[in-house]
Amino acid sequence: MIVSLAELLILSILIDWAFRKLTIPGLVGMLLLGVAFGPYALGWIDPDLLTASADIRLIALIVILLRAGFEVSKNTLNKVGVRVLLLSAVPAVIEGVAITLLGPLLLGLTYLQSAILGSVLGAVSPAVVVPLMIRFIGRNMGTEKGIPTMVLAAAAIDDVFVIVIYSILVGLLVGQDVNIVWRLAGIPISIILGVGVGLIVGLALFRVFRRFDPRATKRVLVILGLSVLLVRIEHLTAEWVPFAALLAIMGIGFIILEKDEHMAHEISAKLGKIWVLAEIVLFTMVGAQVNVHVALAAGFAGATIIGAGLLARSLGTWLCLLGSDLNRGERMFVVISYIPKATVQAAIGGGALAAMRMAEMDTAPGEIILAVAVLSILLTAPLGAWAIDITGNRWLAVAPPSVHDDHDASIDSDAMRN
Image 1 (spheres, helix red, strand yellow):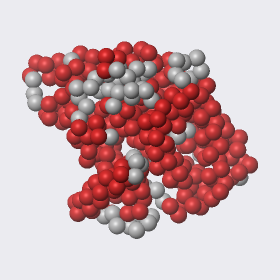
Image 2: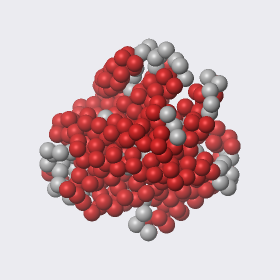
Image 3: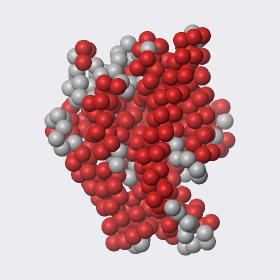
Image 4: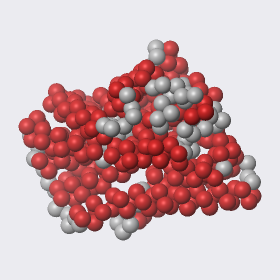
């Protein structure tokens, strides 16, 4: 396994360099490398590494969410709070409704099956979006209006909302006794609990760190360990208490930044260095999950419904920005930032198929849902990342240092290069 990982690291560094020379985000190259080396193409990645990929991807995602938390200041969040809530639900709902209506016509699914597909496709990928937003924050681009912070916060909440809707619909499909009211009520409860727990944990860590003053490296290790435990707690309590661990993880960074910027800067700088490795592992492993053969099976109809869903999503995103102080270019940037799909689709794309098999139902609709989900990753993750990079550089204004919405002292040299 370690040899396979070493090969991916070396090749990813080379591909990252080559893609940047072509003015393409390096993560696009990493995604494509994962697809090419994955079990559904060349099959050169060690099976043991693929077996451990879920845990590895989780650690990488935790790192990027922690970095996001350390980039979100209270002042900026106050400016964009209402927009964050709108963006976390409205675009996904409109996209889901469009796919629900088109699914029977284009793919031969029932309306319920189409709604499940809509919930699978409705999530934006924080793994793709958040790193790019952090890079724009590091370059002070769009920060005067809090645009990158708004997008990265909304992307995290969007996933909570979509996954809850998805679980309700799959339960209805296989005939489970689903308490819809409780599940829907679980959305705000999970968000509030997630943020609250994150703030409490972050405050406790801040006091421990200030009392014992450990090295920044040890602080990072403690935070990473507790973040993993928070995800574990979410899984253990899922049946009784909805809890958004990913928001709790972001909350840890948020409260430490508010209490002590210098401490936050030190921790963020260490996380930035860890991200150099985590980024490679995350995107190559996400790419390795893409079954090209299954994606191609979705065909033209699958691509059409993905495109129609994105158009509907873009309309919803634009509506959420009406009345804001963003200009046309900045609004288009936010719209484009909501295109990439990757981590959530890879995680739940096959869930309906597995549930249908367990219920001894006809699995053909589940196979269609999986195929379209995989195709959405293949089509939107690389192109979306590329489009975000291009439009951000073109349309986001560089703010003066005095109005930087977060901090610049913690930006490491890697972030500045990006």
